[in-house]
Length: 84
Image (cartoon, rainbow, N blue to C red):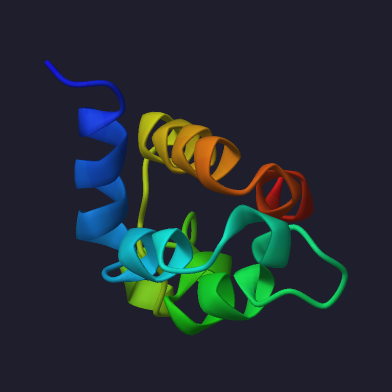
């Protein structure tokens, strides 16, 4: 199994396009003040990650949320802190 393979699959399932969008932006820009990371997270539906599907959320489990956080931390440490 490749490094972060499960995490990437979880993000692709719950927050489609987020991983690709984040990886397209250089780390220095992502982690700069006013960088696009938080906007990309919001646009992908990230704030509703743990909300049930019946409440228009993603319905993620605790393990899903952990995997999302691990991927965010490896891609943009400041975004992982912002979204914790």
